[in-house]
Length: 570
Ligand SMILES: Nc1ncnc2c1ncn2[C@@H]1O[C@H](COP(=O)(O)OP(=O)(O)OP(=O)(O)O)[C@@H](O)[C@H]1O
Image (cartoon, rainbow, N blue to C red; front, side, top):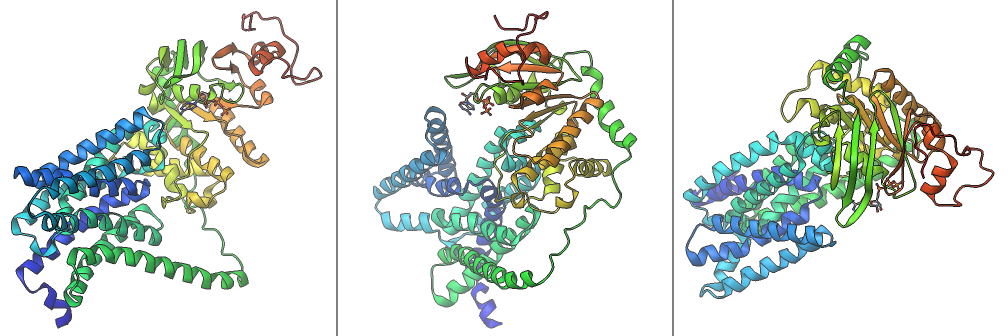
């Protein structure tokens, strides 16, 4: 017992513990988002990049926190500049700044007379030198960081899942990303006083990384991260006292050692379980968690049909005039004009790279027109997000996020609930209904990363159905699906139409396009827009896909039809 109490008997030891705990709690909460978003290197760069700011602050005799904050701003601006103006990957910019800021800091400090002492203090902290004033200065930023990490849970989770999805759900991903950077900066600036700029990174990444090995859900990850960080500080100080090692370094080392211990244990348990699992029959999949059953149709459809179809009923679904869509210097869709009606199934068809996804992205309000105009439901596309559910072609599966299928589908409700409003019974019923519609109720408790590509595609469609919407945008929804999955999606498209919803989908399948109400044929611009019989003519398709692309004896493509609507190409 004495062994446990002795290291914390004196005032400076207690302050070291308090300072370490505050730093660790802050870092472990923010660190969860860093790990989930795969931004650990960014955190590392922050932790080292504040060095010149602190060095200058020391020379000018101002608060090191002010200098550190200024250094963070400079670093973020320069990283953003590199990212926006060069094709270099983000981590190259981060790496450049990481080294530059660190070296600059050392250069500045080397001009002072107490060079090595100052450098050691900044880099490795001085846990035992934490003063009551320092502690007081740490408390308010710590509370702000803690509260913000929890308050921004939904937007940060949506952002970790997919930036485009977060935007289409109205979660303001750019603002959230900027706020996350502020939180990281605050955690690093506050933490460096007790654990140093170099070691604060250990507390930022170590506990969340270890927590990710132990958690099935994100809230569990927060709880583990917090627990591990608190344990690391306590155990680090205890060990450093008895072993006579540096306090800050020992504190930073504990969570990393824990990570490898947990990893090794996990692998051991898995390898021991494997032979046993082979001998036993497979456990049944957890049942879909809807004992209450799907909501009554009146409950469900009254809930989402009436809600959305009122104000937009008279406006066309989409109206484009001279629309140009571009990525930097590259024009993806050149001057195009078309009009889409509500309540119809529209297919967008064209060769690879012809601009189909870009067009869908623009309809979802995720890509602004370079020139010309595009209206969706009578307003700007970026303002119609509450009524538009978008299933993207490729969502990079964030394998590191412990998200279950049910949680991914529930994310669709964020567009209605915003950052704070709690899930009601009706919201939960809607989520369950979406799972049932896509026949993935039995996968509800599985992790997204454990699913096949086709199963994931169903989850993303369920996520869109869970969202209140009158417009469903689908980017190649049938690609890679087996017959049963394709039929399910097909049934959903028809059921959407039966509820007066509009569906716009991209496809490479001529038959699918022929079965739709309206077709946009694209090849670098919208070549033709109208009913399939007028648009999908041999001549139009030959122009879109290149002369000679179509076989003479192809039965699938009719000869050019008379074109009363004038949609056949000149
Ligand atoms: N993020 C991007 N940055 C730069 N160019 C892009 C980007 N995304 C797409 N493009 C380019 O824009 C053009 C249209 O791309 P888009 O993805 O819309 O085509 P698509 O018709 O959907 O193709 P596919 O059938 O292969 O899915 C292509 O030339 C593509 O290279």
